[in-house]
Length: 398
Image 1 (cartoon, helix red, strand yellow):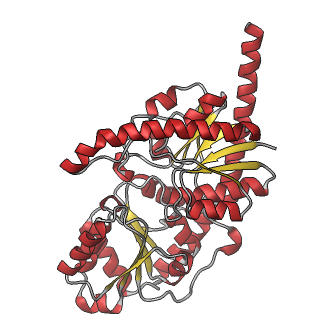
Image 2: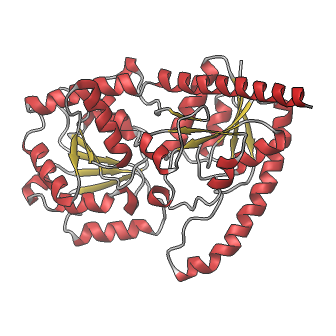
Image 3: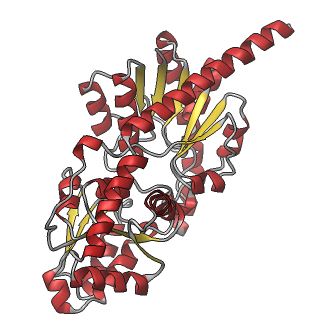
């Protein structure tokens, strides 16, 4: 049995990082391991963890560095916020370390690379620390990542990358300290395919420019009015910044597509929305992994996505596995518009139906929850062996 101190970067339930973290600790618990979970505030995540009988710690910490400023007002507030973050994070690390001491974990696991409080706890307790790289930083999460150099230099630090592209970006080498472990999304028993998908296009995810939502709206606006009337665009997700929603609403109105676009907000029935959709559109400019892609494929939903970063990696993995494309790729607004025209013309052509079937098979093979959990357990076991060997060597040298 392995004891894991598992640290979430926030307490929300809308982001892919927390959903993947939940999948992992549930799987670890099912396999007989013990998990103490940590959140930075009371909220949805903390309540859910307690309801599932996880030993839960709440301590007030923040991202390692404040989000990159975009205005003069934000620049003026940046240094005070950065100082606050450092002070609060050190205090939180002391609280967490005190609570964790009695639990006696074998490893500290930070679920997102945007925080450094887990690394602080590992140094206080002299325990190995796993950093889960789910983000690039500024490219996708608007997060400054100045803390990574110090974390990566620590002899206690180990790493998981959720995609090869993100490992390359952060210069992680797949030695005994770094592993490529894809997120576990698919439960084989729940794979399904709708023989007659509904007549709507779907976007799922945070609403911000980096996710490509504005490109999607521009492409959708280029479809003929009768096509948009017949096939509305459903958008499920919350804005990453509250002030962005009015910007998005203004754009929808100015493009003349307000009657055809539905802003659904946060939804808990995403799987059913995917099952009923004509296609899921993933326009992110730099997605580290994009858990919604295998999730959609497992629900038999046709996927079209930008041919870049972690999205391309998933599509290439499926191409390598099946010998054929498992999704429709685009590079710009014009390319996406042409794909939307093709889908709208007939989503049930033999070619597109076969693509959906291949995609479901690929998602099942590549991104199962079982493989995800077992891959992390294997890393934990190697870490414990490595640390035992290192400790033994240090004692023999004294």
